[in-house]
Length: 101
Image (cartoon, rainbow, N blue to C red; front, side, top):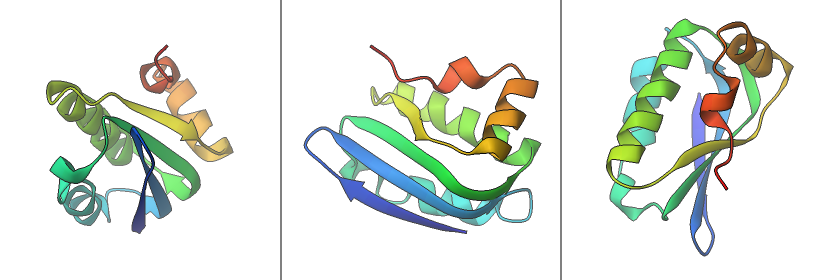
């Protein structure tokens, strides 16, 4: 799993590439929160290159949403794919990561 960061004016986009599963959650968590203070006011997740996601990956996304909310940085998904969408929909969590108006 690789996470690349791209910062624009008020949004940092984090692009995930690889599997978001229990086997990689610890590594992903370390990468996700490394230097989080340097991220922009809004956090956008691009999950379009995620190969597989399981409930451990979903738990990490929920934790990240809660954490970034606590430091006043909204987190939302800007891009996704069928496998991510199907898991979030099955767990009735797709609206949790919608872009806020």
